[in-house]
Every structure is written in structure tokens, then in C-alpha cells.
Image 1 (cartoon, rainbow over the protein chains, first blue to last red):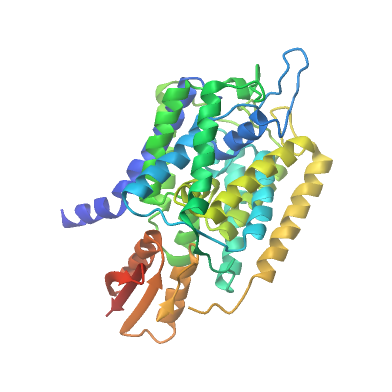
Image 2: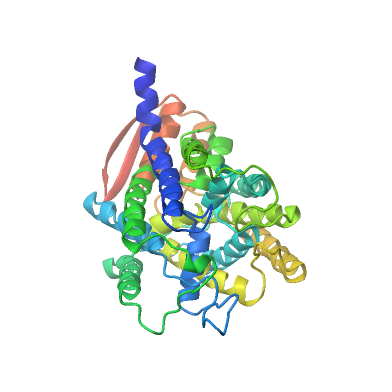
Length: 366
Length: 67
């Protein structure tokens, strides 16, 4: 009995968060989001980059839009959910200044890696839960990337300290998200919304926003992080965060089995491709870069919501990375990948991450 | 005292791990600036056999680890 209580106290909130994220992902897909994309931070930031016309991938002159342009309320809800609960619990602490420019650069390559694979770590788990075996290849790359990152953490890698910032600086990003929500509701002509493709597939705004607000609150409270789970298990033999990883997978798997959406295999998976090498290397970039950043893309949104402006800069880097990926033909699609440019970009990304890792090894002083 | 204020995850825990490994002190003070790090350091310290108490410290947090 005592043991059970301890387990619940240790893992309860994370397991609930994981189940909540998984359930929300399945639900939002049933309500209209693209398949195996109920919740994907990389995809949704990419769509926001599209709505702002930073990229117009697959532009069709006849319908006047690209295929991945939409202001995803899920992103807004995650950030604002985190901000609201952090303010209530007095955990909203504006801080920043921990190598913001390096974080920006790392974030650009993390996003390129994610769009080569076609998903952030969260969508990777959701894809596995849908039976997409290409995502298992991605998971292998993700783990390799995290292990490389850990090698540098053990040798004193750090992007150095952050410092206290003003309330205005900390609130800037959440306020931007609130403005984006207003723009989504008003739909002014200067924003672009896909008429076809994944960007045109969306759950109703209110349900997406509410689901994301709930997940945002839970993720802020539980510190959910897809990278942290594997990192802490290896680094500290701490299996706290990785429990949520399992919970998300279990929830998505159960949901897909109930709804008859589970299709095991490599071929014909929704918004995926079968280029194993690039699925692997794309996620190496994501895993390694995320360890350097201190958290996965989802975690960066939550931290940005808590007033961490380094994470806000990181999210900005993700959005720019998405635009770069689509404007230079680096992002994959169900049709496959553009091997030449992708090889150059992924190769450059690995070199950049190595350089940043080596340059920031230091004798850590407490 | 280990001053881990301003460091992002997981550096505060790594600093504590290093301090614990180098001589397993009976008492160790750690300063962090966010509640997430309080939780992470506490979890690590408890797994390493320490009792942890938390107090306010110049608007941040000070953890006292005792064995």
C-alpha cells in the first residue's frame, strides 16, 4: 500500500499529463486535425510560419494558398495555459540571457531536422502510437542524438547562466501569442490560410484551444519533456520524466485501436516518408539540439510561457527554421525528400551542433 | 554552497551530482532560481540518500541537503 502511494505521488501528475496529451492528440485528430498530427509542435509552428507568409510551401495559384498555412490555436493554448498557471502559482519569473543567439541557431537546425523527419518528438511518439514504423527509426535517431548531447553535458557543456529580466520582457512572448489568437479569430486578409493540404485540416478553434490550455497547464505543472525523459534516465538513472513518454504512447495507441486508426507498417503512413537514413539523421539533430537547449520543442513553449525569454527566442528560431526548411526545399512530404539539399542542411546542422557543443564545454563552477 | 542559479536543466542537477561524487559531504547547500530545479535537485538528492529542506533565498531558493 505504502509503495503504491509513493508511486502515485512520484509519477501521478506526469502519467495524467501524458495520458491527457495522448487523449487530446487522438481527439483533435478525430475533430479534424491531420492524421497522427493531433498535437505536433514542429508542424504547428510551421503552419503558423505559413499563416504569416514566411513560407508558402506547395503554393497553388488557383486556390491562392500553400498547403501548410494556419494559425494553430494549439500553440497559443499551450503557451497561455503555462502563463496562466505560472502566474497563479507565482512561478512566472522573467529571465533570459543564456546564449540567446546560439539558442536561436540551434533551434533553426532542430526545426529543420524535425521537418526532414516530419514531426517533433511528440509527433514521433504519436506516429509510433498510430503504427508508423518510420517513427521507430526516428526514435532510434532521437536516442542517438540525446546520447551525443549527454556526452557533452558530462564534459561540462552549458549555455551559461540566465539572469532576471523585466516583467515586460517576460510577458512579451505570451502577449504575442494572445495577439495571434485575436488575429486567428478576426482572420485579416494579410494572413494566409490553406485551402487544401494538412494546413486546411483543423479541429474547431475552441476545442483545439481548450485542449491545449489544459495540456499547457498540466505540462507546466509536471515539467513534461520528451527529451528530458530519456536524458534523465541515462544521466541520473531517474525515470521520472520518461513515465510520461510511456503514458502518451499508451493513450495514443489505445485511442487509435478503439477508433480503428492503428495501421502497423512502413508504407502509406499519413504525412510520412520511408527514407530511413533521413528519418534517423533528422531526429539525431532534434535529439542532440534539444539536449543542448535543455528541453524538447513542447517544453520550450511551456518555458516561454513562464517568462523564460531564452525559450521565447528558441521558439522564434523554430519558426524561422520552418520557413528556411520550406523555402529551401528541405522539408519532407509524403512524396519523399529532396535528397541533395537535405543532405547539405542536415550535414551542416550536425557540424554546427558539434561546434556549439565543443565551444561551450567549460569547467562548471557552482 | 553550490550556486546553480540561472542554469537551465539539467545543469543544476549535474553540479549537485559532481559535488556529491567528490567526497559525499554530509551537508550541502544548493541555490537555484526556479521551482523546476528545486524539484529536480530534490529528487536526485533523495535518491542519493539525502534529506532535503527548502527555504527562501534572496527571492530564489536554497536547498539544504543533509545525510
